[in-house]
Length: 235
Ligand SMILES: NC(=O)c1ccc[n+]([C@@H]2O[C@H](COP(=O)([O-])OP(=O)(O)OC[C@H]3O[C@@H](n4cnc5c(N)ncnc54)[C@H](OP(=O)(O)O)[C@@H]3O)[C@@H](O)[C@H]2O)c1
Image (cartoon, rainbow, N blue to C red; front, top):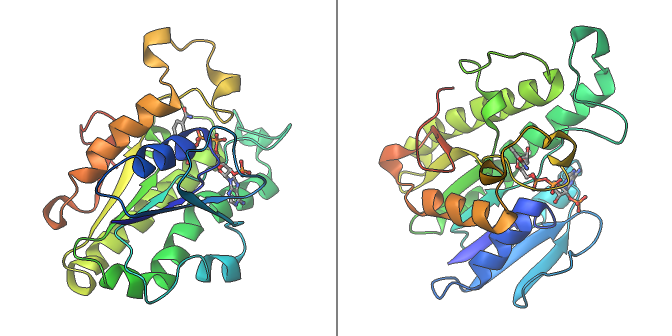
C-alpha cells in the first residue's frame, strides 16, 4: 500500500506515520510537515514540506501516476498563539475563523481534487480526515469554540459530500470523518485540566485506534463519522 499522511508532524499524525511505516502491508509512507521533520520519526518515512494553505504545494504533493491507497488528513488548528478558541460570540476573530476554514476544511477537498487520478489507480482507496466530535451539530450541547466547531462541521460536510460523489466516481473507495478522542498533543494541551487520565490518550494509542477504524472502511460504510472506538457519531 501507498500511504500519504498530511500533518505527519503533529502529535497524532506522527504516530499514524510511525505505525504505518512498521506495517508489512505498507510499501511507502509519505508524511508532510510544515515547520520541521519531527523528532522520534521512524526511519523509512519519506518527508515532504507542505503548507496546506498553499494550493500549488497541495497539487504537487503526490505523483499523478502513482496509486494512492490511504490518505489521512491529520492537520488541525484550534488556537493560534494567543487567539482562540472563542468562548463567546463577542470574541469572534475573523482572522481565526478564516484560518480555521483554510486549514481544517478546504485542503481536504483540494487534495481530493488533485489526487483523484492516484486514488483511481488504487484497488481500494481510502480518504480519512481527523475531524473532532465538537464538529457534530447534533452533539453540540455546550457551545463555544466557534471557529473550530464551524470549520470541523464544514470538514464533515465536505467529507460526506465527497463520499456521495465517490459512489459513482470512485466506487471502490471509502471516505470517513474521524474523532480521535482527547489526545495529549500541542493542540489539546491547554485544555486537558479536566480530562481524567484514562481518557487522555497518547498519540500512539490514538493512532492505533484510528488505524483500526480506517482499515475497516469499505464503500458500503463510506460517508460516516466515526469515533476512535469504532462507534458512529451523529453529524
Ligand atoms: N488532540 C486532541 O485531543 C484532538 C481532539 C479532537 C480532534 N483533534 C484533531 O486531530 C488532528 C491532529 O491534531 P493534533 O492533536 O495532532 O495536533 P498538533 O500536534 O497540534 O498537530 C497539528 C498539525 O497540523 C499541522 N498544521 C497546522 N497548520 C498547518 C498548515 N498551514 N499547513 C500544514 N500543516 C499545518 C502542524 O504542522 P507543524 O507542526 O509542522 O506546523 C501539525 O502537524 C487535528 O485535526 C485536530 O483538530 C485533536
